[in-house]
Length: 102
Image (cartoon, rainbow, N blue to C red; front, top):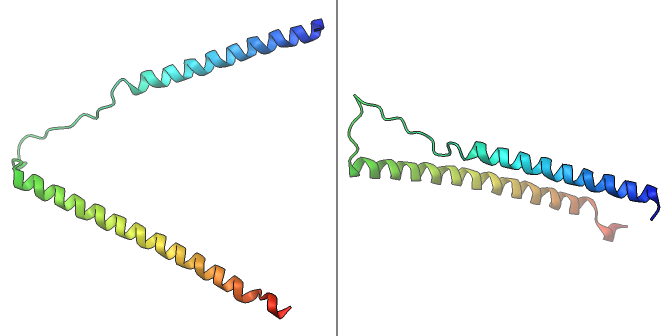
């Protein structure tokens, strides 16, 4: 190897080492920030709230399940309408181009 090639190789290795150390530093900084407080604090309100009983907890769970089901149904309906419109576009394309008419 010539001296120029050796110099470029050395500069490349140093550059790669600097790049890897910078990436490592950024990754550890993100991990430290995310590990500080990952559990959200729950506020407990005192006073006018009714006590939580098994029946109220069950009702809340059922209400949330119904809301989730309704959201999934509306999302599925949207997906189906998108598929049907795409299918209609493909059918329209097949009626425009008919190779038997050529």
